[in-house]
Image 1 (cartoon, rainbow, N blue to C red):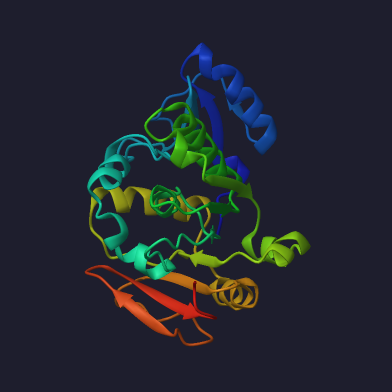
Image 2 (cartoon, helix red, strand yellow; image 1 turned 90 degrees about the vertical axis):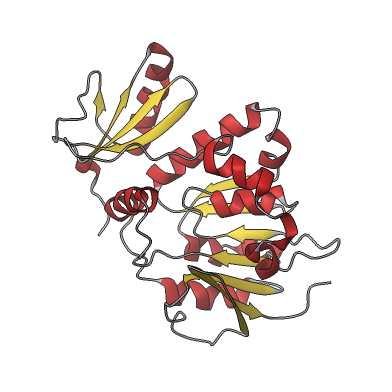
Amino acid sequence: MSTTPTDVAVCYVDEAGREDAQLLAVRLGLPLLDQYDLRDEQFAQLLICEAGSRRLQQTGRKAPGPVLADFVSGAVAHRRKFGGGKGQMIAKAVGIKGGIRPQVMDVTAGLGRDSFVLATLGCEVQMVERSPIIHALLESGLQQAQRDPEVADIAARMQLVNADSIEWLNDSQTVACRPQVIYVDPMFPHTDKSALVKKEMRVFRDIVGDDQDSAALLERALTIAEYRVVVKRPRKAPAIEGQAPSYQLSGKSSRYDIYTLKSLS
């Protein structure tokens, strides 16, 4: 079950974040707080704005740290510099090889990390995220990346849409354009014990819940994608109900189920 609007409020840290918070509260239909205390559990989550950034944070004395879309620093920056390039499993899964850089539609964008990896490798990526709150984090992360000289060219290959993915795939313009590769990473119970994963999964489950329509999304993706559909799964998880994948690529903790429709060339 998704978090209801009364479970989330918008607030700001500084004067530079005030205008963004005011506009965001109106856009999302959420309460705006002029002052806040993370120990106060009146709201389960706070969408916090400050100069040039947004972050989502749970409240309560033992709540984990903030969740945000960061394409400039931290783990994403390390992976961009040292992640293995075209040798990464995700690159093989979407069909990157030689001079081939397929256009990818990521229909479960989340915090955009996989989309950023694919854009780093030269793919044009359209990110579709249905949660308006997660979309707001992605929007902020992309704006920061566009201002950073090291990653601005990568961010230029990323487009962001706030829409329900099945409805977006039913849109006449999407049908006419036919994305070459559709990438799906639905919510699934994770067994990774790292603090980062536990923190993000707690936030995501509160905001967006589990993906109950994965089978319908896969079915629709298979009718729209031109070359292939790629589904990311925990390594030991079952495939999504429906058509069996053409083949799989497995790593230590995750797996890619690849549904080939025709050969990439």
